[in-house]
Length: 196
Ligand SMILES: [Zn+2]
Image (cartoon, rainbow, N blue to C red; front, side, top):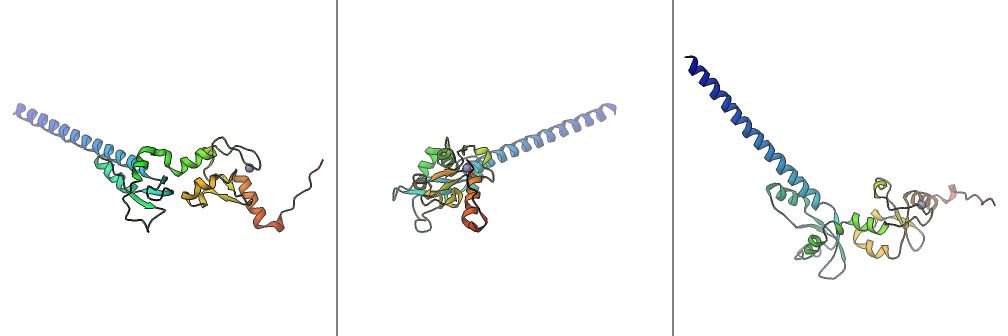
C-alpha cells in the first residue's frame, strides 16, 4: 500500500517535471523566434539610397520590414521593396536594386549616408562640430543652400541628398533655428554693432 502511494507520488513528480521542461523549452523557442523576428524587422527598417539600374540615378527605397520580420521569425531572409521614390510609375520593376541593398548593407541607409557627409565637418556659422550623431536626437544639423537659406536635411527628398551635399554647406541646429527666425521675423531681430 505504502509502496504504491510512493510510486504514485514519484510518477506525479516525474510528470510535472516533464510538463515543466516542455513548457520551458517552448518558452525558450518562442523567445528565440521573437528575438530573431525583431532583429530581422529592425535590420530591414529605414530608408536607403541606391542607384536605380534602369536610369542610373539615385533612388530612395524602403524594404518590407514587416515581411522581413515575419520571415525571420520563422527562419529565413526576405528581401523585397515596399516603396521607392520612382513608384508608382515604376512599381512593376524587377527590383534589381536589391542586390545593392544586400551588398551595401547598413552603408546605404539614409541616416548613415547623412552621418558620413557630416563627419568631420563644422557649422559654417559658429564653427562648432556637427558630426556627433548622439546629439542629433531632436537637434538635427541643417544645410545652407547656395542662396543662403538654411534647410533641415530631413525636409529634403532623400534621393536628392547626394546632389544637394555637393552644393550645400553644413549648419548646426542652433544656427539653423537662429537663421530661420531671422529670416521669418526680420522685424524682431536687431543686429548690435560690434564693439571694438
Ligand atoms: Zn552653428
